[in-house]
Amino acid sequence: MKTPFPFILKSLFAAGLFLFSMTLHTGFAHSANPDFRQWMASMHRIDYPRHGCNSQASLLPRIRGMGGAVIPLAKNRFFIAWFPPGWEKQSRRRLVVTLHGNGGCAERMFTFWHRTAALHGYAIIAVQYAQEDENGRLSYDDSPALYALLEKTVNLLRRHCPLQGVTIILHGFSRGAARVYELAAMDRAPGGMRAFSAFIADSGAVFAEYRGRLSPYLERLGLDAYDGARFWLYCGGRDHEGRTCRGIEKISWFIRRHGAVVDAVYRHPPGGHGIFLTGGVHRRSKPLEALFSYINRLSP
Image (cartoon, rainbow, N blue to C red; front, side, top):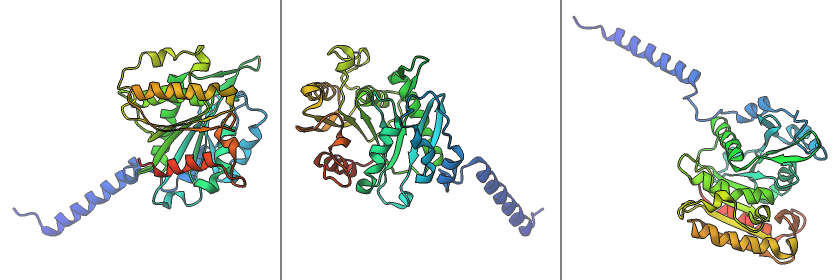
């Protein structure tokens, strides 16, 4: 007996409604929350009493008013997220993930990138990876723990924000720069995210922590450990009486030998510790112009 044609149409229509409903409930309808800023606002928390930045923590309550959010990762671990207005509509979008140095403050790195936003228009993610102990001393996550924080950060952003086709860059300052060389190898290792299009080391190599030697992790790397990972390195000529530039040159040779592509080693003879101290919106900075030009040329 033939099935009536209207019955088939009704069945197909009902099945379509069911699949559409399931798609909405399971999240397959969209690769990211269409209103990711609402998600950011819902996640915003500012209570991190032992993250070691009391002198700069006044920034955290102001982040919401700036259009950003402070998103928790773990106890006293969080990231500051800020996307420029209309960023999601740009044809070529860049997102910078930045790591603080010995000062231990994501707030400081966020401020450096945010106050120059008019020059570049990047989305900014500043990750906190240090905290104070009972005696007021700062302790820092090692590279494996820090990479786990980065994985959690990137996965949250990918789940809720429009990151398809976005160029993601990892920037580290000082101690954060010293961590970048290990983090880059972890990102390229089997099981790594391969999330970052380039790695920027700002005023730091690994040698200051290990009495002029490589870290044990770097000493064990194979010759293809970086697998074409791209680097842009900066040092100021007056930073630690030139020792930082010598360390940058030495680590540059090492990562090249292990499969990295070093697009530039930018030496700024009059510079001190940190590329963002060379200028900004109201004072021209050739190092910053070179950095932003480099980032703008990158692709995912």
